[in-house]
Image (cartoon, rainbow, N blue to C red; front, side, top):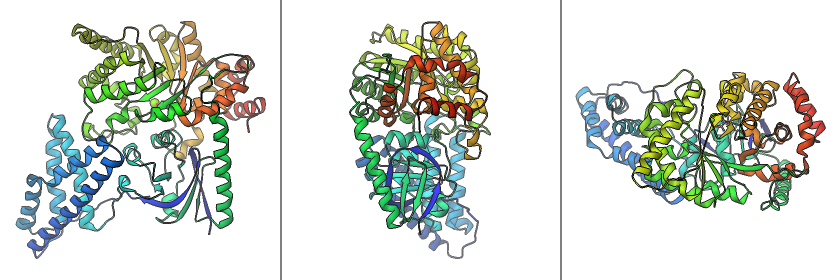
Length: 573
Ligand SMILES: C=C(OP(=O)(O)O)C(=O)O
Ligand SMILES: [Mg+2]
């Protein structure tokens, strides 16, 4: 029987395929006495052998499908599984204490993990993270629990998961993964953002996808309206096939605008740029007519691997993006790790409120070696295109000044060593913390540009976690409080002769576009797949008309009032 589950539309398009559930098991390890320690050791060895076989497969697959970077993490895991320093103590424990293999493994691994983690050495900390992962895999075999390996998927499926971490998402191969649905998350959670950059339909925050869907069920992911349809009847299936065809036809219509500039009906040019996460995303950005890159989220370079990327690796990535963009502006954001984007190998302590914690620029100003490596790679790459650098999560002027000072120190060092660096790199900041939006007039004197990060700005202004669907009713982009902050930032920039862009998801939202145009936003950076729709909309809008509604909108009292007014005034469905 057809069942429909409602969620949040996270990435447009319609996918129809069999479901593949991505399991994240919870292990409970109990201590048990065994009467035949020899047999228990053999059971342990068999589980290790199975885990090795599985890892070999995954590594090969990752190498072919996803590249060397992503395969490296599995090679590191194999090293751990071949290490007698870990395996022998487990066997000795089984024999000496006559205990079960699960317990002996868990205890031994924990001992190594805490020992390595306590060392003030990045390399050893990374080994601790590898041991954790590998132990989980062997435990799964010992306990007979299935563990999912997203990188192994080799037939067309839609992935169903409670949640997808950014590194899970990074392992998905879009040749096979046609779409996904998750129980938790919102439109601006990073799995949703990655789905848009991979151009696969996704619905998030369904609350019940994993409870209602089994592997093998036929599932329709309607990323246009946020519905997940399970085991559809023939009628429903036909309906959605038609909807998919209509959407494809509309996309073909928009595609005609690829090489056009974005000019409003009264002749104003605004820049429509793309948000990207990896150099591979540049292709999609250009195919979708991006006039620049408004946000390159560099943290994906650091994720899904077992150690920090080297200066050389980063240099290559930045250079590739700059060269492929052929002189078009490329705004690179320095590392914005923290919140829901974790780096297990940094092994930072768990925090009660990670979104309010030690993240992004806060972390970079403290872990300066890591920050300086990234800045050097960026500076060296600057000669290959039109690079602009921006810092994430700036709350105070002092943070911006410190970050900029470090950038200039590295620039001088490079120049002293005779390394060419571009002279006039613009240095800007993200405005995603309300304090920075309020004090934008002061910041505007010191930055070259602002890029408003509404994904975070909304969650911090409304005190509503962007990942938590229970408070998603408070996540209101059109709330007049948000509009006033945005307007303040744009006006402050213009007063100082600077430009203001937006790289939060709001920039690509059809209801927000006329508002932002009227407030004077100069650059709109969005998922590549939204650009052509936005261009088609922009060409029909008059900036002069939109600007006339500025005061009216800013004096409204609720988001509903704003939405109703905008939809009526600008004829948006
Ligand atoms: C673009 C933003 O950054 P991220 O989504 O990566 O936090 C934002 O906060 O709006
Ligand atoms: Mg942000």
